Image (cartoon, rainbow, N blue to C red; front, top):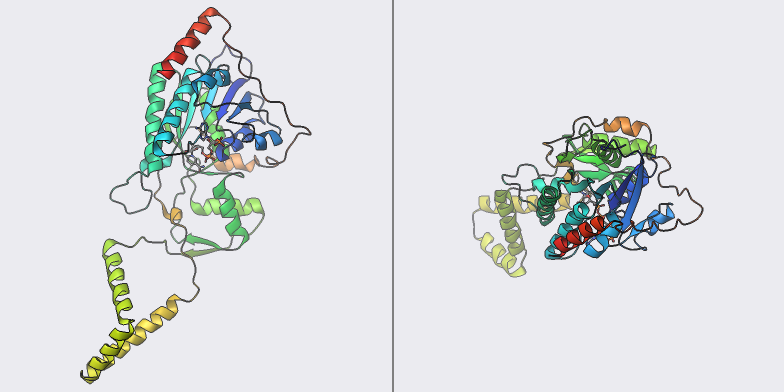
Length: 389
Ligand SMILES: NC(=O)c1ccc[n+]([C@@H]2O[C@H](COP(=O)([O-])OP(=O)(O)OC[C@H]3O[C@@H](n4cnc5c(N)ncnc54)[C@H](OP(=O)(O)O)[C@@H]3O)[C@@H](O)[C@H]2O)c1
């Protein structure tokens, strides 16, 4: 598999952030293939313990450090950036910038770079918003996308930006949460079934393979299931993979209260708190005794209605469906030609994925060979100087 017809060996594919929830599952899926050789890159050996326990040899180092970039990536034909930096906004920005740049600068000449971004770049996903403000996460990912495009233009290497939706698969939090709801028999879905923006890891692998074989033009894409799945389809798949029936309770979607309702509620709460004060109650009762009968009866009816409402509110009730089940459907630039996700899942790609297949821990992967010729050494020195300036 190669966009370069001269390369006949399996392509070397580095996965940065290999021990993250998305990176680790992609490593396990790609390791089963014979047409790619994966280089899982983790920052340290404790981080890579799970992958090594699963039999995958790893390379160790910090892709954000210029000093490590070359030995980690120099021999890689493809670099998949699945890192997600943490820290203060400034630290995140700097780390993500450097990793994005180094993926281009230190990979093999002509290498392909695949960068994972997110649907959060489209802003607030709640329905009915006039403005879709971005969260700090969405803003940081947009800034990193810009760094990726700049590095792409500087180096001329092909780049793919995949804006992932909620990632599903056996190692993904969202799939574990859905399966826990199904096992406990407490699935609550909104009556109106919405597009889910989810993407199973098998579809991410499909997109990666199509990109590196030249079947998709470089660019920025929304990467969701092909075609998009609704939430009921996601729940039905997870129930089927557990071998359990899907018992759902359908309720109206959770509606975020409008400003007017919020103000009314606050005013009523304040009034309720005031009338609950002993002094106010005492004085109120005294005053009521002097008012006409009709007013007394209305006040009493109001009081009974309030008490009943409080009692009803304290009865156990169904929780509203999770807010993300009604988020708006995204998706502007889908990848043409992806295999339908349902078809990929039909071949049971996750069967046995989490079972270690080795009897001993693999040795660590060696670093990439240092530059051999004077020309290569000169190129390398130039790249290091450019990145550190
Ligand atoms: N999960 C989803 O549903 C989802 C949805 C949309 C987009 N995405 C995107 O997919 C990518 C992976 O997400 P994830 O959920 O797998 O994240 P994750 O579980 O938090 O993993 C993050 C990975 O990045 C590494 N990392 C963090 N800071 C680093 C740094 N300074 N230098 C090098 N590596 C660093 C971590 O390594 P350590 O263990 O050493 O910290 C870890 O391997 C991200 O770009 C994210 O925005 C994910």
